[in-house]
Length: 198
Image (cartoon, rainbow, N blue to C red; front, side, top):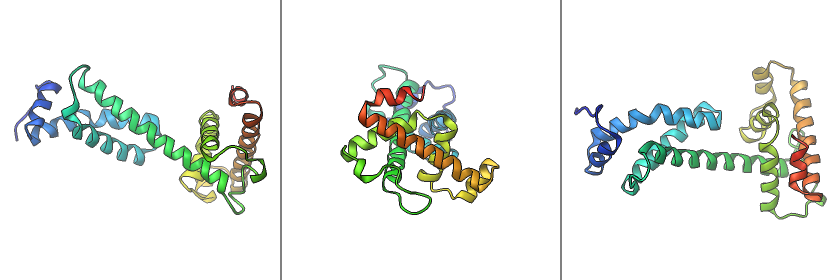
């Protein structure tokens, strides 16, 4: 196997575009850890960050022919990584919004009563996305684990080292808080609702 350790990124890219698999391997190993750490810092989940890092690198390698050298390769790559992570977060929070809105049963009672909904689906999701994103980290994390990742009350009880009833109470309070903020956002505006979280 050829070694490319002393090659600059741009030199590796030229080799890769000539179908040199060893150069591709070098570029991958050069950036994988950094890409993974960047994903992890944004996503806060090891497994998801691992998958996103792989996907982002593959996407970048697939688009190498579009790299013009107007910035460094690392800057170009991190833009792709950042966009991939933001898209993953958008999907995750969109799912949370839908789960809150369409939930049924004891653990997923309606966050928003249907007769109070006047916005269309897209507006609702955008408002909920903004509110969830601006919650204190501990509240946001608990809600995402329960309603996006589908973790059970028992699992959350073990993770947080608190009783199941305490987990349910925290979830209930966070949902009530979101409900109040949502109503505020739809009556006087999102800015005013977000100011309540400041």
